[in-house]
Image 1 (cartoon, rainbow over the protein chains, first blue to last red):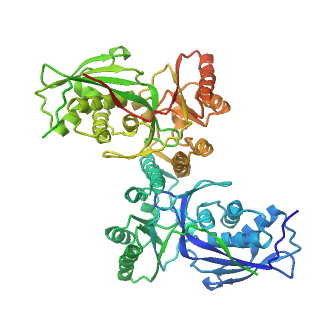
Image 2: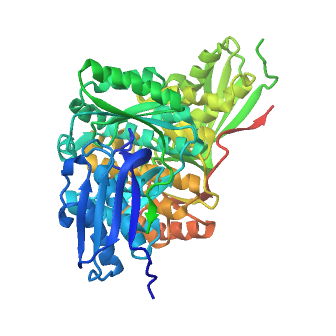
Length: 319
Length: 319
Protein backbone atom coordinates (compact mmCIF):
# COMPACT_ATOMS: atom_id res chain seq x y z
CA UNK A 1 0.00 0.00 0.00
CA UNK A 2 1.34 3.40 -0.94
CA UNK A 3 2.10 5.84 1.80
CA UNK A 4 0.11 8.98 1.04
CA UNK A 5 1.24 12.29 2.40
CA UNK A 6 -1.02 14.51 4.47
CA UNK A 7 0.65 17.59 2.99
CA UNK A 8 -1.29 19.70 0.58
CA UNK A 9 1.69 21.81 -0.40
CA UNK A 10 5.47 21.25 -0.41
CA UNK A 11 8.19 23.73 -1.25
CA UNK A 12 11.64 22.52 -2.31
CA UNK A 13 14.87 24.34 -3.05
CA UNK A 14 17.54 23.20 -5.51
CA UNK A 15 20.89 24.96 -5.71
CA UNK A 16 22.68 26.47 -8.68
CA UNK A 17 25.56 24.42 -10.01
CA UNK A 18 28.85 24.68 -11.82
CA UNK A 19 29.34 22.06 -14.52
CA UNK A 20 32.53 20.96 -16.30
CA UNK A 21 34.84 22.34 -13.57
CA UNK A 22 37.83 22.75 -15.84
CA UNK A 23 38.90 19.30 -16.96
CA UNK A 24 35.52 17.58 -16.44
CA UNK A 25 33.61 18.63 -19.55
CA UNK A 26 30.17 16.99 -19.51
CA UNK A 27 31.02 14.75 -16.55
CA UNK A 28 31.76 16.83 -13.44
CA UNK A 29 29.70 19.33 -11.49
CA UNK A 30 29.29 20.88 -8.06
CA UNK A 31 26.59 22.77 -6.22
CA UNK A 32 27.02 26.23 -4.71
CA UNK A 33 25.39 27.88 -1.72
CA UNK A 34 22.94 30.68 -2.25
CA UNK A 35 21.42 30.94 -5.71
CA UNK A 36 18.92 28.33 -6.84
CA UNK A 37 15.28 27.68 -7.64
CA UNK A 38 12.24 27.20 -5.43
CA UNK A 39 9.38 25.04 -6.59
CA UNK A 40 6.13 24.65 -4.68
CA UNK A 41 3.97 21.65 -5.52
CA UNK A 42 0.35 21.88 -4.38
CA UNK A 43 -2.65 19.56 -4.76
CA UNK A 44 -4.92 21.17 -7.27
CA UNK A 45 -8.69 21.50 -7.69
CA UNK A 46 -8.37 20.42 -11.30
CA UNK A 47 -6.92 17.13 -12.62
CA UNK A 48 -3.53 16.93 -14.36
CA UNK A 49 -0.21 18.67 -13.84
CA UNK A 50 0.06 22.36 -14.53
CA UNK A 51 2.49 25.17 -13.92
CA UNK A 52 0.55 27.91 -12.21
CA UNK A 53 3.19 30.58 -12.00
CA UNK A 54 6.81 31.40 -12.75
CA UNK A 55 8.39 34.19 -10.76
CA UNK A 56 11.69 35.76 -11.72
CA UNK A 57 13.41 36.07 -15.09
CA UNK A 58 10.58 38.34 -16.27
CA UNK A 59 8.27 35.42 -16.93
CA UNK A 60 10.48 34.23 -19.79
CA UNK A 61 9.98 30.58 -18.87
CA UNK A 62 7.06 28.81 -20.56
CA UNK A 63 4.08 27.88 -18.40
CA UNK A 64 3.33 24.94 -20.67
CA UNK A 65 4.24 21.73 -18.80
CA UNK A 66 5.71 20.02 -21.83
CA UNK A 67 7.97 22.93 -22.69
CA UNK A 68 9.44 23.37 -19.24
CA UNK A 69 12.00 21.05 -17.64
CA UNK A 70 10.32 21.42 -14.25
CA UNK A 71 7.05 20.20 -15.74
CA UNK A 72 8.62 17.46 -17.85
CA UNK A 73 10.66 16.06 -14.94
CA UNK A 74 7.64 16.05 -12.63
CA UNK A 75 5.59 14.28 -15.33
CA UNK A 76 8.26 11.63 -15.73
CA UNK A 77 8.28 11.02 -11.96
CA UNK A 78 4.49 10.90 -11.76
CA UNK A 79 4.26 8.41 -14.62
CA UNK A 80 6.91 6.23 -13.01
CA UNK A 81 5.16 6.14 -9.65
CA UNK A 82 1.78 5.52 -11.27
CA UNK A 83 0.29 8.60 -9.67
CA UNK A 84 -3.33 9.12 -10.74
CA UNK A 85 -3.48 12.66 -12.07
CA UNK A 86 -7.18 12.83 -11.41
CA UNK A 87 -5.81 14.24 -8.22
CA UNK A 88 -4.09 17.15 -9.91
CA UNK A 89 -0.93 18.97 -8.91
CA UNK A 90 0.15 22.50 -9.70
CA UNK A 91 3.65 23.94 -9.58
CA UNK A 92 4.77 27.44 -8.66
CA UNK A 93 8.31 28.16 -9.75
CA UNK A 94 10.48 30.89 -8.35
CA UNK A 95 13.76 31.45 -10.18
CA UNK A 96 16.44 32.80 -7.91
CA UNK A 97 19.15 32.84 -10.50
CA UNK A 98 19.43 34.07 -14.07
CA UNK A 99 18.69 31.90 -17.08
CA UNK A 100 21.58 31.40 -19.46
CA UNK A 101 24.18 32.24 -16.84
CA UNK A 102 25.96 28.88 -16.97
CA UNK A 103 24.82 27.99 -13.46
CA UNK A 104 22.41 25.20 -14.31
CA UNK A 105 19.23 27.22 -14.20
CA UNK A 106 16.99 24.68 -15.95
CA UNK A 107 18.56 21.88 -13.92
CA UNK A 108 17.70 23.60 -10.63
CA UNK A 109 14.06 24.04 -11.68
CA UNK A 110 13.87 20.45 -12.72
CA UNK A 111 15.43 19.16 -9.49
CA UNK A 112 13.36 21.37 -7.17
CA UNK A 113 10.26 20.25 -9.05
CA UNK A 114 10.80 16.49 -8.61
CA UNK A 115 11.87 16.90 -5.00
CA UNK A 116 8.73 18.89 -4.20
CA UNK A 117 6.38 16.60 -6.12
CA UNK A 118 7.94 13.44 -4.64
CA UNK A 119 7.43 14.78 -1.11
CA UNK A 120 3.89 15.92 -1.92
CA UNK A 121 2.84 12.43 -3.07
CA UNK A 122 4.24 10.79 0.06
CA UNK A 123 7.94 10.39 -0.76
CA UNK A 124 7.68 7.09 -2.65
CA UNK A 125 11.34 7.48 -3.69
CA UNK A 126 14.53 8.33 -1.82
CA UNK A 127 16.24 11.51 -3.00
CA UNK A 128 19.03 9.85 -4.96
CA UNK A 129 16.43 7.79 -6.87
CA UNK A 130 14.98 10.99 -8.33
CA UNK A 131 17.91 11.62 -10.64
CA UNK A 132 16.63 9.74 -13.72
CA UNK A 133 13.48 11.88 -13.87
CA UNK A 134 15.44 15.10 -13.88
CA UNK A 135 17.58 13.71 -16.70
CA UNK A 136 14.37 12.79 -18.56
CA UNK A 137 13.24 16.38 -18.12
CA UNK A 138 16.47 17.77 -19.54
CA UNK A 139 16.29 15.30 -22.41
CA UNK A 140 12.71 16.18 -23.31
CA UNK A 141 13.36 19.90 -23.04
CA UNK A 142 16.69 20.18 -24.84
CA UNK A 143 17.02 16.95 -26.81
CA UNK A 144 20.16 15.93 -24.97
CA UNK A 145 20.47 14.02 -21.73
CA UNK A 146 22.96 15.68 -19.43
CA UNK A 147 23.15 14.67 -15.81
CA UNK A 148 26.03 16.84 -14.59
CA UNK A 149 24.04 19.89 -13.47
CA UNK A 150 21.00 17.96 -12.25
CA UNK A 151 23.08 15.46 -10.29
CA UNK A 152 25.07 18.22 -8.57
CA UNK A 153 21.92 20.17 -7.78
CA UNK A 154 20.12 17.12 -6.43
CA UNK A 155 22.94 15.56 -4.43
CA UNK A 156 25.17 18.53 -3.59
CA UNK A 157 28.95 18.42 -3.40
CA UNK A 158 31.04 17.29 -6.36
CA UNK A 159 29.50 14.68 -8.62
CA UNK A 160 31.09 12.69 -11.39
CA UNK A 161 28.75 11.45 -14.10
CA UNK A 162 30.06 8.25 -15.63
CA UNK A 163 26.92 7.84 -17.70
CA UNK A 164 24.10 10.26 -18.27
CA UNK A 165 21.19 8.13 -19.32
CA UNK A 166 20.46 6.08 -17.34
CA UNK A 167 22.62 8.01 -14.87
CA UNK A 168 25.66 6.43 -13.23
CA UNK A 169 26.79 9.10 -10.80
CA UNK A 170 29.53 9.08 -8.16
CA UNK A 171 29.52 11.55 -5.26
CA UNK A 172 33.06 12.73 -4.56
CA UNK A 173 34.43 14.09 -1.27
CA UNK A 174 34.52 17.88 -0.88
CA UNK A 175 37.76 19.35 0.52
CA UNK A 176 36.69 21.31 3.60
CA UNK A 177 38.39 24.64 2.97
CA UNK A 178 37.23 24.97 -0.61
CA UNK A 179 35.49 28.22 -1.52
CA UNK A 180 34.07 29.31 -4.79
CA UNK A 181 33.93 32.65 -6.56
CA UNK A 182 31.32 33.00 -9.29
CA UNK A 183 31.27 35.97 -11.58
CA UNK A 184 28.39 36.37 -14.00
CA UNK A 185 28.98 38.95 -16.73
CA UNK A 186 25.68 40.32 -18.00
CA UNK A 187 25.79 38.80 -21.42
CA UNK A 188 23.76 35.77 -22.39
CA UNK A 189 24.99 32.62 -24.12
CA UNK A 190 22.57 29.92 -25.12
CA UNK A 191 23.76 26.45 -24.22
CA UNK A 192 22.82 25.22 -27.69
CA UNK A 193 25.04 27.82 -29.37
CA UNK A 194 27.96 27.28 -27.04
CA UNK A 195 27.73 23.58 -27.84
CA UNK A 196 27.57 24.15 -31.59
CA UNK A 197 30.92 25.89 -31.71
CA UNK A 198 32.74 22.90 -30.23
CA UNK A 199 34.67 20.75 -32.68
CA UNK A 200 33.54 17.16 -33.00
CA UNK A 201 37.13 15.98 -33.13
CA UNK A 202 39.89 16.90 -30.73
CA UNK A 203 43.60 16.14 -30.61
CA UNK A 204 44.39 12.87 -28.86
CA UNK A 205 47.28 14.68 -27.21
CA UNK A 206 44.93 17.21 -25.61
CA UNK A 207 42.44 14.54 -24.65
CA UNK A 208 45.21 12.69 -22.80
CA UNK A 209 46.08 15.86 -20.86
CA UNK A 210 42.42 16.32 -20.03
CA UNK A 211 41.89 12.82 -18.67
CA UNK A 212 45.18 12.95 -16.76
CA UNK A 213 43.93 16.13 -15.11
CA UNK A 214 40.47 14.73 -14.40
CA UNK A 215 41.94 11.62 -12.78
CA UNK A 216 44.25 13.84 -10.74
CA UNK A 217 41.39 16.12 -9.72
CA UNK A 218 39.35 13.17 -8.43
CA UNK A 219 42.41 12.01 -6.46
CA UNK A 220 42.87 15.56 -5.12
CA UNK A 221 39.30 15.54 -3.74
CA UNK A 222 39.95 12.27 -1.91
CA UNK A 223 43.39 13.33 -0.65
CA UNK A 224 42.23 16.86 0.20
CA UNK A 225 45.34 17.94 -1.69
CA UNK A 226 44.79 21.59 -2.64
CA UNK A 227 48.07 21.93 -4.54
CA UNK A 228 47.21 18.96 -6.73
CA UNK A 229 43.67 20.27 -7.16
CA UNK A 230 45.15 23.52 -8.42
CA UNK A 231 47.43 21.78 -10.90
CA UNK A 232 44.59 19.58 -12.18
CA UNK A 233 41.60 21.92 -12.47
CA UNK A 234 42.34 23.18 -15.95
CA UNK A 235 40.77 22.67 -19.33
CA UNK A 236 42.86 21.88 -22.39
CA UNK A 237 39.96 21.16 -24.71
CA UNK A 238 36.82 23.24 -24.29
CA UNK A 239 38.00 26.49 -22.70
CA UNK A 240 40.14 27.55 -25.69
CA UNK A 241 36.98 27.46 -27.84
CA UNK A 242 34.27 28.70 -25.52
CA UNK A 243 36.35 31.46 -23.98
CA UNK A 244 35.99 33.30 -27.30
CA UNK A 245 32.35 33.97 -26.39
CA UNK A 246 33.27 35.62 -23.08
CA UNK A 247 34.76 39.13 -23.25
CA UNK A 248 37.78 39.49 -20.98
CA UNK A 249 37.93 35.77 -20.17
CA UNK A 250 41.70 35.38 -20.12
CA UNK A 251 42.23 38.64 -18.25
CA UNK A 252 39.75 37.50 -15.58
CA UNK A 253 41.39 34.09 -15.34
CA UNK A 254 44.84 35.64 -15.03
CA UNK A 255 43.57 38.06 -12.35
CA UNK A 256 42.07 35.17 -10.38
CA UNK A 257 45.22 33.07 -10.54
CA UNK A 258 47.40 36.05 -9.64
CA UNK A 259 45.22 36.55 -6.56
CA UNK A 260 45.92 32.94 -5.57
CA UNK A 261 42.97 31.05 -7.04
CA UNK A 262 43.61 27.29 -7.23
CA UNK A 263 41.94 27.30 -10.62
CA UNK A 264 39.52 29.31 -12.72
CA UNK A 265 37.52 28.38 -15.79
CA UNK A 266 34.11 28.63 -17.41
CA UNK A 267 31.04 27.51 -15.46
CA UNK A 268 29.03 25.18 -17.67
CA UNK A 269 28.66 26.74 -21.08
CA UNK A 270 29.26 30.22 -19.67
CA UNK A 271 29.25 33.15 -19.55
CA UNK A 272 29.82 32.78 -15.79
CA UNK A 273 33.29 31.92 -14.56
CA UNK A 274 34.13 30.05 -11.39
CA UNK A 275 37.34 30.24 -9.38
CA UNK A 276 38.27 27.94 -6.50
CA UNK A 277 40.25 29.03 -3.46
CA UNK A 278 40.85 28.11 0.20
CA UNK A 279 39.10 30.85 2.15
CA UNK A 280 36.16 33.20 2.03
CA UNK A 281 38.35 36.28 2.16
CA UNK A 282 40.50 35.03 -0.70
CA UNK A 283 37.41 34.10 -2.72
CA UNK A 284 36.21 37.65 -2.17
CA UNK A 285 39.48 39.25 -3.25
CA UNK A 286 39.53 37.06 -6.34
CA UNK A 287 36.03 38.20 -7.23
CA UNK A 288 36.97 41.85 -6.85
CA UNK A 289 39.92 41.47 -9.19
CA UNK A 290 37.83 39.64 -11.78
CA UNK A 291 35.20 42.32 -11.49
CA UNK A 292 37.77 45.02 -12.21
CA UNK A 293 38.40 43.40 -15.57
CA UNK A 294 34.71 43.55 -16.47
CA UNK A 295 34.50 47.16 -15.34
CA UNK A 296 37.22 48.14 -17.80
CA UNK A 297 35.05 46.51 -20.48
CA UNK A 298 31.96 48.40 -19.31
CA UNK A 299 30.18 45.14 -18.55
CA UNK A 300 27.83 44.73 -15.61
CA UNK A 301 28.15 41.58 -13.54
CA UNK A 302 27.00 39.72 -10.45
CA UNK A 303 29.50 38.36 -8.00
CA UNK A 304 28.84 35.44 -5.73
CA UNK A 305 31.09 33.95 -3.05
CA UNK A 306 30.20 30.68 -1.35
CA UNK A 307 31.35 27.38 0.01
CA UNK A 308 30.50 24.22 -1.87
CA UNK A 309 26.89 23.23 -1.15
CA UNK A 310 27.13 19.69 0.21
CA UNK A 311 23.42 19.18 0.89
CA UNK A 312 21.90 19.52 -2.55
CA UNK A 313 18.18 19.90 -3.02
CA UNK A 314 15.87 19.79 -0.03
CA UNK A 315 12.30 20.27 1.06
CA UNK A 316 12.15 23.56 2.93
CA UNK A 317 8.51 23.75 3.93
CA UNK A 318 5.44 21.55 4.00
CA UNK A 319 1.88 22.42 4.92
CA UNK B 1 79.60 15.71 3.03
CA UNK B 2 78.22 12.93 0.89
CA UNK B 3 77.43 9.64 2.48
CA UNK B 4 79.41 7.01 0.63
CA UNK B 5 78.28 3.42 0.65
CA UNK B 6 80.53 0.60 1.72
CA UNK B 7 78.85 -1.72 -0.78
CA UNK B 8 80.79 -2.78 -3.81
CA UNK B 9 77.79 -4.36 -5.50
CA UNK B 10 74.03 -3.83 -5.29
CA UNK B 11 71.30 -5.83 -6.98
CA UNK B 12 67.85 -4.31 -7.49
CA UNK B 13 64.62 -5.73 -8.86
CA UNK B 14 61.95 -3.74 -10.72
CA UNK B 15 58.60 -5.32 -11.54
CA UNK B 16 56.82 -5.62 -14.86
CA UNK B 17 53.93 -3.21 -15.32
CA UNK B 18 50.63 -2.79 -17.11
CA UNK B 19 50.16 0.66 -18.64
CA UNK B 20 46.96 2.33 -19.87
CA UNK B 21 44.67 0.03 -17.86
CA UNK B 22 41.66 0.53 -20.11
CA UNK B 23 40.60 4.14 -19.87
CA UNK B 24 43.97 5.54 -18.76
CA UNK B 25 45.88 5.71 -22.03
CA UNK B 26 49.34 7.21 -21.38
CA UNK B 27 48.48 8.21 -17.81
CA UNK B 28 47.74 5.12 -15.70
CA UNK B 29 49.80 2.06 -14.81
CA UNK B 30 50.20 -0.64 -12.21
CA UNK B 31 52.91 -3.09 -11.19
CA UNK B 32 52.47 -6.86 -11.08
CA UNK B 33 54.10 -9.49 -8.93
CA UNK B 34 56.55 -11.93 -10.47
CA UNK B 35 58.07 -10.87 -13.78
CA UNK B 36 60.57 -8.03 -13.86
CA UNK B 37 64.18 -7.11 -14.36
CA UNK B 38 67.23 -7.48 -12.15
CA UNK B 39 70.09 -5.04 -12.42
CA UNK B 40 73.33 -5.39 -10.50
CA UNK B 41 75.50 -2.30 -10.18
CA UNK B 42 79.13 -2.92 -9.21
CA UNK B 43 82.11 -0.66 -8.72
CA UNK B 44 84.39 -1.20 -11.65
CA UNK B 45 88.14 -1.34 -12.18
CA UNK B 46 87.82 0.99 -15.13
CA UNK B 47 86.37 4.52 -15.12
CA UNK B 48 82.99 5.36 -16.66
CA UNK B 49 79.66 3.56 -16.81
CA UNK B 50 79.38 0.39 -18.81
CA UNK B 51 76.96 -2.45 -19.29
CA UNK B 52 78.91 -5.62 -18.73
CA UNK B 53 76.26 -8.18 -19.53
CA UNK B 54 72.64 -8.66 -20.52
CA UNK B 55 71.07 -11.99 -19.68
CA UNK B 56 67.77 -13.08 -21.15
CA UNK B 57 66.04 -12.13 -24.39
CA UNK B 58 68.87 -13.79 -26.34
CA UNK B 59 71.14 -10.82 -25.87
CA UNK B 60 68.96 -8.66 -28.09
CA UNK B 61 69.47 -5.60 -25.87
CA UNK B 62 72.37 -3.32 -26.78
CA UNK B 63 75.37 -3.27 -24.47
CA UNK B 64 76.10 0.31 -25.48
CA UNK B 65 75.20 2.57 -22.53
CA UNK B 66 73.72 5.30 -24.71
CA UNK B 67 71.45 2.91 -26.59
CA UNK B 68 70.01 1.22 -23.54
CA UNK B 69 67.44 2.77 -21.20
CA UNK B 70 69.14 1.17 -18.19
CA UNK B 71 72.40 2.85 -19.13
CA UNK B 72 70.83 6.18 -20.05
CA UNK B 73 68.81 6.39 -16.84
CA UNK B 74 71.83 5.56 -14.69
CA UNK B 75 73.88 8.19 -16.53
CA UNK B 76 71.19 10.80 -15.92
CA UNK B 77 71.19 9.97 -12.19
CA UNK B 78 74.98 9.99 -11.97
CA UNK B 79 75.20 13.38 -13.70
CA UNK B 80 72.55 14.79 -11.39
CA UNK B 81 74.33 13.63 -8.24
CA UNK B 82 77.68 14.81 -9.53
CA UNK B 83 79.19 11.35 -9.20
CA UNK B 84 82.79 11.26 -10.39
CA UNK B 85 82.95 8.47 -12.94
CA UNK B 86 86.64 8.06 -12.41
CA UNK B 87 85.27 5.57 -9.95
CA UNK B 88 83.55 3.51 -12.60
CA UNK B 89 80.39 1.44 -12.35
CA UNK B 90 79.30 -1.53 -14.38
CA UNK B 91 75.82 -2.90 -14.80
CA UNK B 92 74.69 -6.49 -15.24
CA UNK B 93 71.16 -6.76 -16.52
CA UNK B 94 68.99 -9.83 -16.23
CA UNK B 95 65.72 -9.67 -18.14
CA UNK B 96 63.03 -11.77 -16.52
CA UNK B 97 60.31 -10.85 -18.94
CA UNK B 98 60.03 -10.67 -22.69
CA UNK B 99 60.77 -7.52 -24.69
CA UNK B 100 57.89 -6.18 -26.71
CA UNK B 101 55.30 -7.93 -24.58
CA UNK B 102 53.54 -4.76 -23.46
CA UNK B 103 54.67 -5.25 -19.87
CA UNK B 104 57.06 -2.33 -19.63
CA UNK B 105 60.26 -4.25 -20.28
CA UNK B 106 62.48 -1.25 -20.96
CA UNK B 107 60.92 0.60 -18.02
CA UNK B 108 61.78 -2.22 -15.62
CA UNK B 109 65.42 -2.24 -16.75
CA UNK B 110 65.60 1.48 -16.38
CA UNK B 111 64.06 1.49 -12.91
CA UNK B 112 66.12 -1.43 -11.59
CA UNK B 113 69.22 0.31 -12.90
CA UNK B 114 68.67 3.64 -11.11
CA UNK B 115 67.61 1.92 -7.90
CA UNK B 116 70.76 -0.24 -7.91
CA UNK B 117 73.09 2.61 -8.84
CA UNK B 118 71.54 4.98 -6.30
CA UNK B 119 72.06 2.42 -3.54
CA UNK B 120 75.60 1.69 -4.70
CA UNK B 121 76.64 5.32 -4.49
CA UNK B 122 75.25 5.69 -0.96
CA UNK B 123 71.55 6.37 -1.55
CA UNK B 124 71.80 10.14 -2.10
CA UNK B 125 68.15 10.17 -3.21
CA UNK B 126 64.96 8.68 -1.77
CA UNK B 127 63.25 6.16 -4.05
CA UNK B 128 60.46 8.45 -5.24
CA UNK B 129 63.05 11.06 -6.24
CA UNK B 130 64.51 8.65 -8.80
CA UNK B 131 61.57 8.90 -11.17
CA UNK B 132 62.83 11.80 -13.32
CA UNK B 133 65.99 9.88 -14.27
CA UNK B 134 64.04 6.89 -15.49
CA UNK B 135 61.89 9.24 -17.57
CA UNK B 136 65.09 10.78 -18.97
CA UNK B 137 66.21 7.29 -19.90
CA UNK B 138 62.98 6.51 -21.72
CA UNK B 139 63.15 9.88 -23.47
CA UNK B 140 66.72 9.40 -24.63
CA UNK B 141 66.07 5.83 -25.77
CA UNK B 142 62.73 6.27 -27.53
CA UNK B 143 62.42 9.99 -28.17
CA UNK B 144 59.29 10.26 -26.08
CA UNK B 145 58.99 10.82 -22.36
CA UNK B 146 56.51 8.41 -20.83
CA UNK B 147 56.33 7.99 -17.10
CA UNK B 148 53.45 5.52 -16.77
CA UNK B 149 55.44 2.29 -16.87
CA UNK B 150 58.49 3.63 -15.02
CA UNK B 151 56.40 5.23 -12.26
CA UNK B 152 54.41 2.02 -11.70
CA UNK B 153 57.58 -0.09 -11.70
CA UNK B 154 59.39 2.24 -9.29
CA UNK B 155 56.56 2.94 -6.86
CA UNK B 156 54.34 -0.13 -7.18
CA UNK B 157 50.55 -0.09 -6.97
CA UNK B 158 48.45 2.05 -9.29
CA UNK B 159 50.01 5.31 -10.42
CA UNK B 160 48.41 8.19 -12.25
CA UNK B 161 50.74 10.35 -14.31
CA UNK B 162 49.43 13.90 -14.55
CA UNK B 163 52.56 15.05 -16.32
CA UNK B 164 55.38 12.99 -17.75
CA UNK B 165 58.30 15.38 -17.93
CA UNK B 166 59.01 16.56 -15.33
CA UNK B 167 56.87 13.84 -13.77
CA UNK B 168 53.84 14.70 -11.63
CA UNK B 169 52.71 11.32 -10.38
CA UNK B 170 49.97 10.35 -7.92
CA UNK B 171 50.00 6.97 -6.14
CA UNK B 172 46.45 5.63 -5.93
CA UNK B 173 45.09 3.13 -3.39
CA UNK B 174 44.99 -0.53 -4.41
CA UNK B 175 41.74 -2.42 -3.67
CA UNK B 176 42.82 -5.38 -1.53
CA UNK B 177 41.13 -8.23 -3.35
CA UNK B 178 42.28 -7.22 -6.80
CA UNK B 179 44.02 -9.89 -8.85
CA UNK B 180 45.43 -9.69 -12.30
CA UNK B 181 45.57 -12.13 -15.18
CA UNK B 182 48.17 -11.44 -17.85
CA UNK B 183 48.22 -13.35 -21.09
CA UNK B 184 51.10 -12.83 -23.47
CA UNK B 185 50.51 -14.20 -26.97
CA UNK B 186 53.78 -15.02 -28.66
CA UNK B 187 53.69 -12.33 -31.27
CA UNK B 188 55.71 -9.14 -31.05
CA UNK B 189 54.48 -5.58 -31.48
CA UNK B 190 56.90 -2.69 -31.42
CA UNK B 191 55.70 0.20 -29.28
CA UNK B 192 56.65 2.62 -32.05
CA UNK B 193 54.44 0.84 -34.57
CA UNK B 194 51.51 0.47 -32.20
CA UNK B 195 51.73 4.20 -31.58
CA UNK B 196 51.90 5.06 -35.28
CA UNK B 197 48.54 3.48 -36.03
CA UNK B 198 46.74 5.72 -33.54
CA UNK B 199 44.82 8.62 -35.02
CA UNK B 200 45.96 12.07 -33.99
CA UNK B 201 42.36 13.23 -33.67
CA UNK B 202 39.60 11.48 -31.77
CA UNK B 203 35.89 12.14 -31.39
CA UNK B 204 35.10 14.52 -28.54
CA UNK B 205 32.21 12.22 -27.69
CA UNK B 206 34.56 9.28 -27.13
CA UNK B 207 37.06 11.41 -25.26
CA UNK B 208 34.29 12.44 -22.85
CA UNK B 209 33.42 8.78 -22.22
CA UNK B 210 37.08 8.04 -21.62
CA UNK B 211 37.60 10.79 -19.05
CA UNK B 212 34.33 9.95 -17.33
CA UNK B 213 35.58 6.39 -16.98
CA UNK B 214 39.03 7.42 -15.80
CA UNK B 215 37.56 9.70 -13.14
CA UNK B 216 35.25 6.88 -12.07
CA UNK B 217 38.12 4.39 -11.98
CA UNK B 218 40.15 6.65 -9.69
CA UNK B 219 37.11 7.00 -7.41
CA UNK B 220 36.64 3.20 -7.48
CA UNK B 221 40.21 2.71 -6.21
CA UNK B 222 39.57 5.06 -3.29
CA UNK B 223 36.13 3.62 -2.51
CA UNK B 224 37.28 0.03 -3.04
CA UNK B 225 34.17 -0.28 -5.19
CA UNK B 226 34.71 -3.30 -7.43
CA UNK B 227 31.44 -2.92 -9.31
CA UNK B 228 32.29 0.66 -10.26
CA UNK B 229 35.83 -0.42 -11.13
CA UNK B 230 34.34 -2.96 -13.51
CA UNK B 231 32.07 -0.41 -15.17
CA UNK B 232 34.91 2.09 -15.53
CA UNK B 233 37.89 0.02 -16.67
CA UNK B 234 37.16 0.17 -20.38
CA UNK B 235 38.72 1.87 -23.33
CA UNK B 236 36.62 3.75 -25.87
CA UNK B 237 39.52 5.28 -27.76
CA UNK B 238 42.67 3.20 -28.15
CA UNK B 239 41.48 -0.40 -27.87
CA UNK B 240 39.34 -0.28 -31.04
CA UNK B 241 42.49 0.60 -33.02
CA UNK B 242 45.21 -1.42 -31.32
CA UNK B 243 43.13 -4.54 -30.91
CA UNK B 244 43.49 -5.02 -34.66
CA UNK B 245 47.13 -5.99 -34.09
CA UNK B 246 46.21 -8.75 -31.62
CA UNK B 247 44.71 -11.95 -33.08
CA UNK B 248 41.69 -13.11 -31.09
CA UNK B 249 41.55 -9.96 -28.98
CA UNK B 250 37.78 -9.62 -28.78
CA UNK B 251 37.24 -13.34 -28.24
CA UNK B 252 39.73 -13.29 -25.36
CA UNK B 253 38.11 -10.20 -23.86
CA UNK B 254 34.65 -11.76 -24.15
CA UNK B 255 35.90 -14.99 -22.57
CA UNK B 256 37.42 -13.05 -19.66
CA UNK B 257 34.27 -11.03 -19.03
CA UNK B 258 32.09 -14.12 -19.29
CA UNK B 259 34.27 -15.74 -16.62
CA UNK B 260 33.57 -12.77 -14.34
CA UNK B 261 36.52 -10.45 -15.02
CA UNK B 262 35.88 -6.91 -13.81
CA UNK B 263 37.56 -5.66 -16.95
CA UNK B 264 39.97 -6.74 -19.65
CA UNK B 265 41.97 -4.74 -22.16
CA UNK B 266 45.38 -4.36 -23.77
CA UNK B 267 48.45 -4.07 -21.54
CA UNK B 268 50.45 -1.09 -22.72
CA UNK B 269 50.82 -1.26 -26.47
CA UNK B 270 50.21 -5.01 -26.45
CA UNK B 271 50.23 -7.78 -27.44
CA UNK B 272 49.67 -8.83 -23.80
CA UNK B 273 46.20 -8.50 -22.35
CA UNK B 274 45.37 -7.93 -18.70
CA UNK B 275 42.17 -8.85 -16.90
CA UNK B 276 41.24 -7.77 -13.38
CA UNK B 277 39.26 -9.91 -10.94
CA UNK B 278 38.66 -10.42 -7.22
CA UNK B 279 40.41 -13.70 -6.41
CA UNK B 280 43.34 -15.83 -7.41
CA UNK B 281 41.14 -18.73 -8.44
CA UNK B 282 38.99 -16.51 -10.62
CA UNK B 283 42.08 -14.91 -12.15
CA UNK B 284 43.28 -18.40 -12.96
CA UNK B 285 39.99 -19.49 -14.57
CA UNK B 286 39.95 -16.30 -16.62
CA UNK B 287 43.45 -17.04 -17.88
CA UNK B 288 42.49 -20.58 -18.86
CA UNK B 289 39.54 -19.33 -20.91
CA UNK B 290 41.64 -16.68 -22.62
CA UNK B 291 44.27 -19.28 -23.37
CA UNK B 292 41.70 -21.52 -25.02
CA UNK B 293 41.06 -18.77 -27.56
CA UNK B 294 44.75 -18.56 -28.45
CA UNK B 295 44.96 -22.35 -28.72
CA UNK B 296 42.23 -22.34 -31.37
CA UNK B 297 44.40 -19.82 -33.26
CA UNK B 298 47.49 -22.03 -32.86
CA UNK B 299 49.29 -19.30 -30.97
CA UNK B 300 51.64 -19.99 -28.07
CA UNK B 301 51.31 -17.84 -24.99
CA UNK B 302 52.46 -17.26 -21.41
CA UNK B 303 49.98 -16.90 -18.65
CA UNK B 304 50.66 -15.05 -15.45
CA UNK B 305 48.42 -14.64 -12.41
CA UNK B 306 49.29 -12.25 -9.61
CA UNK B 307 48.15 -9.68 -7.12
CA UNK B 308 49.00 -6.06 -7.69
CA UNK B 309 52.61 -5.41 -6.67
CA UNK B 310 52.37 -2.64 -4.08
CA UNK B 311 56.07 -2.41 -3.27
CA UNK B 312 57.59 -1.44 -6.59
CA UNK B 313 61.30 -1.60 -7.18
CA UNK B 314 63.64 -2.63 -4.36
CA UNK B 315 67.19 -3.48 -3.54
CA UNK B 316 67.35 -7.23 -3.03
CA UNK B 317 70.99 -7.79 -2.19
CA UNK B 318 74.06 -5.77 -1.31
CA UNK B 319 77.60 -6.92 -0.80
